[in-house]
Amino acid sequence: MDAEFRTSFVREPGSLRHHPALVLNADYRPLSYYPLSLWPWQEAVKAAFLDRVDIIAEYDHVVRSPTIQIRIPSVVVLREYVKPQKRVAFTRFNLFLRDEFSCQYCGAKGDLTFDHVVPRSRGGITSWENVVAACGRCNLHKGSKTLKQAGVSLRKPPRQPGAEELRNMGRKFPPNYLHDSWIDFLYWDAELEA
Figure 1 (cartoon, rainbow, N blue to C red):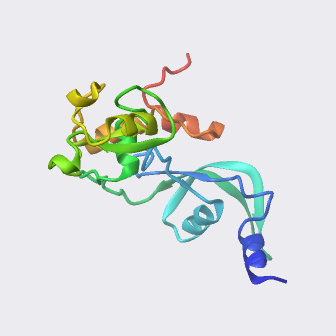
Figure 2 (tube, rainbow, N blue to C red; figure 1 turned 90 degrees about the vertical axis):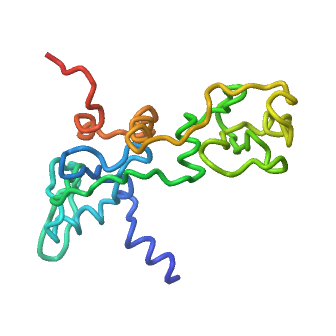
């Protein structure tokens, strides 16, 4: 039997592959919204056994060892508070998140690149204040021209986002799948049912 196949089979049996656990900080807020802070069920079970998390909600499915049986955690909360980062890393993902995954010239979504507002060939630097998300068509059209030369304008001026601002921006992009047990912890500003 192939070792790689055996390892993937043991680590991700088909019936349990889709049981991630939502990870909450000690203040019961997700560590991140986008990407949503999720652990594979194996990590959640391991952290529970090591007393690093408390299990708040569980799936109906169980995992078994020769000596014990445990329901798979769906929501876990860290026992120790993890201080959120204040500084936002300048990454492609964070740049796209800041720009809400849309071209800053035409508003198109999907198939994004990034564009230097002041082209590098004209002394522009790679920074929060000079780089925006752009669709391939707009990026090609603008090329190494200035905004005025290309006849385009920005939807909003580029700037460095704050950490809290970026976290809140991530809340606008829920993942494709949300387990019912996660909802109460993800939308703090949702209206409560009476």
